[in-house]
Length: 235
Length: 115
Image 1: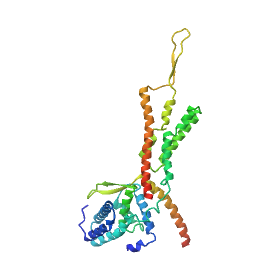
Image 2: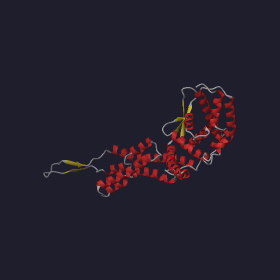
Image 3: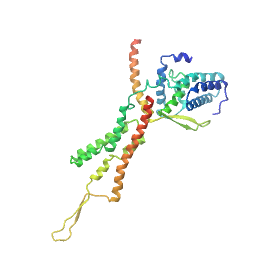
Image 4: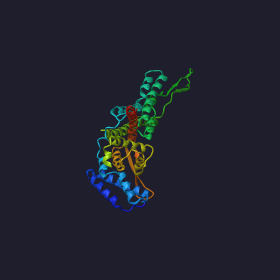
């Protein structure tokens, strides 16, 4: 668009706006003036300056009195606070949901797995473990405080949370038995279970320990930052 | 003209509600400030002074409910575009639920007046 030629009505309007806005902090004042000037330029460019003076007058009329615009910038009592909703997770009660989501994702599978180690029926124990972690995942995905990519991160790193580490520890260790033949010759070695070489299992265990905890901390910090922003507005 | 409207019983209410109308227009896509004002102004009875939307946008940005980005325009200076943040989305969602209850309650009571 080509810049519209300076118009005395526009310049007068902007001068009055600048004067009225002198009570605002410098950055807000500059932002307001730049925004209104940009609006006027865009409107005049869109109209192609067809209507001349009458069009400019009508444009400035619709923008409103400079004093009124500045009044809207200084936190009018009616607009702030009175209509802010206190519901839906903006209040302190809502903060528990995010903490619960992150906690369940990290350790929700543990009670079930520990019960399995203590001798609970395996199927029941697995169901319990799944229930714990899944509840966390549901809370994560139904929360408004995380972006989709963060939800994906929370779900995929690591499914089951710390539960996967416990599963790894609970897997039967390889045991080999050599039964000698009756005649004294060496028998066949039979092995049960399986095991990973330490070069693999130790780094794997470290990742399975650190990754879910790191993701939990990141998710909590992000949700908390956003909540603080929103709550600061309400007050 | 403005003085008469400022005395309107709805002016305080309008100011409070307008910011959620802004959030709602940003719910699906990022919008150029001028287009946003034009869209709001086209709805009859919603905006009295178009200029008051700019301080409102500025406040929403400072509060972290919308974010802004500069984008090149085909001609002329870069334009400021506005987008909803996750916190803004949550606030909008909460408001919509409360607003429906409030609107229905007012309509219910006022209906007695017009019967």
